[in-house]
Image (cartoon, rainbow, N blue to C red):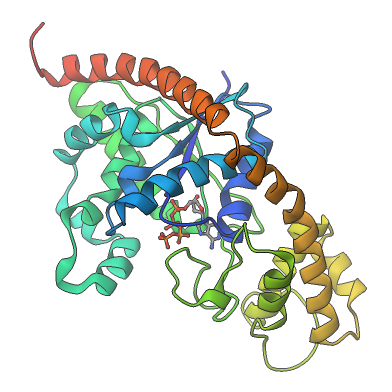
Length: 330
Ligand code: AQP
């Protein structure tokens, strides 16, 4: 049987190149061989304070980005998480079998709660339980993720097994789909940190909507490593290796080919080539993004259809879950 694929992105702001290379690009390829659900995870987004008006705009922006990147709504369902309330219902149930210690170990919680201090909410703590619910609700067996989400996916597997042992075989155990190169695109200003939507440093990330001039400026100003030479070594040359990863994805060339192409070249020439390639890769997508944003009726039709299809599948699973757990009445 073909794997059912589930994945999602938080509409916390405009998406960046890390989201594209670590998630969207993979999704576009996968959808040709697998049934897919691609969610805009707005319930996850509110685990960090959001401006309500901006959140609504970002939801539509992310939907338009999915489509512009090449997600085909005839093949895959695109929908908004909060419009399928079964996600939150299952998260509550799974929360009752998740241990506090398991959640305390999550690095994303430690990172994000550190930034929020006393204001840190319960939602941020239980974020991985909602993510487990997202995946298990549809019996998804394959979840494309970047490196940063691997720990959460591992916890989803633990929770699924625990539920199955306690209440009978209900959930498929999901596997991560992780690509070799590009699963962790790093900040252009600090190659020790991943490129992240919430990074306040503008130059750290390339937004998918950045114009050619902005992309060029950000890449030309990207930090490089000490020493010379363009060689792929994420340990010793993390900044250059990160730029090589962008070039690899944008040009389709292997790391060996890139090293050969720039043998003896300086960082300046290399960065120019990276900028040209990234601009070339994003250009057509940006045009499509604008077209979808200008056509709200089409966007609405796609999201409505996605919501209806997802709800039907989710409710089927929830009927089984409620019965197994003994909730409600017969
Ligand atoms: N830097 C990255 N490199 C590769 N993949 C990445 N992803 C995110 N950053 C990178 C992948 O994008 C998908 C969606 O992520 P998300 O928006 O749900 O949450 P996130 O991982 O927390 O993304 P950000 O950009 O860092 O957002 P903020 O700053 O809001 O937390 C996931 O598949 C993720 O792996």
